[in-house]
Image (cartoon, rainbow, N blue to C red):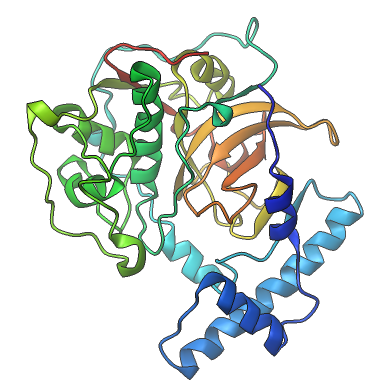
Length: 343
């Protein structure tokens, strides 16, 4: 399957401003519905915006010269400081006991021989729309839920939007911490015995509050909306190549990455030497892979939870084969009733 770049959205995201004058600042606030507490708060946010716009312009000059393989653009995160971005990314490690897979599924160690040169689950009718976690640091809930939505649809031919809020509010016994971070695999450890609510009955409420609520979900066998039976690692030995057979066999994979420098990404193949190859702070979904025809760079295709206004309509491509941003640290796949996705 081909990765279809949404040209219109990409171009809109890639437009940068020469100077953050009043008109540009007001246009930014209007487009993204920005409301600030007071004039002091707004002045601080505008200073962040101006600094980030300058960085975007400088980076895109290098991109225009062919010196970097991705572009940056103004988006709804452009008024955030680096420290705010860092604090907002709340994926965190917990004691190793929480990380144990609930089954004896082996790690995937096959070579990539025999698999297609490109794969993109994002083009499947079972891929749900891109979502936005807002001000809550519950990226793990979005990564866990997106995978389950896809697999449930593959098994039933019906796409049902599930509730991230139920995982944010309820999966603390499995090691997660509401809007203060967690891991997708820990969310799955909670889903396996409890199921997961539909978004229609348990809608997302942490978008603006940035806080989890009290768990309102009660397990009921007659409304068990996700029959997840297990999950497993594609690798625990940083074997990046294991993710290709994993994607082909099990569908989208939840991964952990270092997203410290990703907030202004607009398009292209992300390849940044500043990105850590050991530490992670954000959970996303790996949905495919391919090779960029313009640069020849092999890439992964990943789905984010920062809205469709970010990146390539909510997705991004990251260079493959370098363990960029520590992508091989914790790749995990889910299984629903033993059903494998449709290739």
